[in-house]
Amino acid sequence: MFERIAIHGWLCWALYLLAAGVTLTSESHRLCPQPCRCNTMLLEANCSDRQLNTVPDSLPQNIKLLNLTRNKIKTLVQQQFKALPQLLHLDLSDNELVFIEVEAFLGLQNLINLRLTHNHIKIIPVGAFAGMPKLKSLDISDNEILLFLDFTFCDLPALQYLTAVDNDIVFISHQALTGLTSLEELHLDGCNLTAVPTQALTQLSRLRSFHFYRLGIATLPNYSFRNLDYLKELVISHCPWLKMISGNSLFGLNLTSLTITHSNLSAVPYIPLQHLVYLVFLDFSFNPITYIHGNKLGGLLRLQELRLVGGSLLCIETGAFRGLSYLRLLNVSGNLLTTMEIGAFQSVDTLRTLGLDNNPLECDCRLLWLARRRPNLDFGGNSLTCATSVHFHGLNFLDLEEDELSGLLTCRHPRILNRKSQETRVDQGHTVMFYCTAEGDPAPSVTWLNPQLKPVSPTGRIWVLSNGSLEIRYAQPQDSGTYLCVASNAAGNTSLPVSLHVQAFPKSSRNPSRLKGWFVPQGINGNQQLPFDFKTLLVAATIGFISFFSSVSVCFIFMFFWSKSKGQIKHTATIAYVPRSTMTSGKGGSGNHTETSRFTMKLI
Image 1: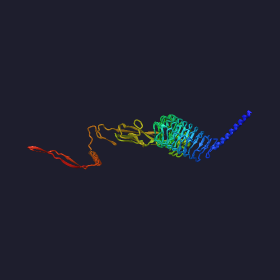
Image 2: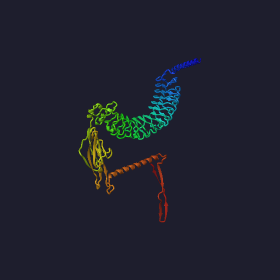
Image 3: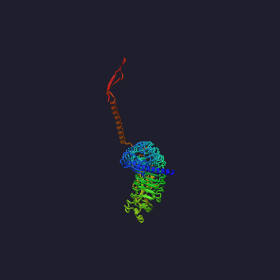
Image 4: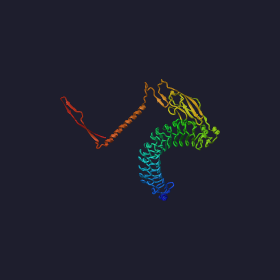
């Protein structure tokens, strides 16, 4: 009997569960709004592209993914999604959202991913993101957001990824990012910012990756990213006004990856890079950088990848990568390079990938090392063509055989054309010019050494002109000696000595000395006097008289107009005076007679 009762109970419970399951399934189907498509297996509700003006009601409470993209929703009201506690992913992209009320997402305690891209949001009120304690990813790109107020994101303690690009942000409050204690990656658009939001960024103590787009400043100031101790990746991109990176702008960072692309840097910022000893990846592509100078990047001990694509590189100097023992990828394609010499590298044994295409290469002996290392280098599938070589013009020289390359990739030793002995004697003060013209393949560079065998400075009284000539202006006795013209290229060098002897002025000379372009009078401190120049004196006196007369005239004119502006003005004045007493006396007596006289004067 008890067994029957037990069996009957189990059967009733099983039937109840089955009925409940059927009811739940039918209820789930029934609760899916008509415009949407629900998948009970994937727990997904797809309401995309349904011309919805509001978030539909009666959505299945157990769904984990809700797609509301490409609709016409304009407002999210308070507790809009409170009936969806199991929701993990919510996408509201490509709507017409203008306003989000406070606590609009309250109740989504399990939400992980929220996308609000391609809308018309201008301001996010404080408290709009309340009620999402587990949110990890937030994308508010492609809106019209103007500013971030204090504590805008304070309700998102678990947020790890925040993307806010393609907005109109003009101001970020100092406490706007407070509360993002778990944020690791930030993508920010700063096209209308007038300064780096340094104070706001200091709140992001765990930030590891920062992407800054369209920064609207010309100089990256010092200490822009202070207190970001965990930052490893910094990307600054599409900043057409950015011309300079201040020396301490990256101070305090221990970056492993630095990217500054699509900007206006004309030189590699060597000083800001000096302390980045952990840097592995460096990218300065699409900047008008013209030179990579020698012995400037040696502090980047761990650098493995260097990219400078689409720039204005004219030359990579010898020793440019000296100290970079781990460099394995170099991409300088799309520049103005004519060659790539082996002397630029610390060691080519570590190099694995080289991008050198789309450069006007001169195929000569300087590229022979490159051809011989073809089996060990990856050129990215791009061909290397020669722009100036008659033998290789338009051809990929990497496709040629070894014996052909050895015979064609050659250089011609430099030769100084006019080797006639140059010995010059001049008096002190004259300008002297020495000429040195050389030819070779490739075209040799010309340098000059002074009598102490030190390179002549490109500026100053003694300098080298752009055509290779040496100019000594206002020669002095100490300039005397032998100067050496050195012409060099990849095939070697040659030299030509020239001699200069400068005759000093005799110490007993009292006559005025005339230098080329200068006149120095003598005897100023002695007995000899400077000659009297009547013409100069007359001109000076005339100028002085004219200046004095002009000043007095201006004063009189000013007084005249000033008197005219002072109320009732009397244009005449009567002055009475007593003249000296007239004495009338005779022998027998004396007498005094006093007269008073008057006269009238006209005032102007």
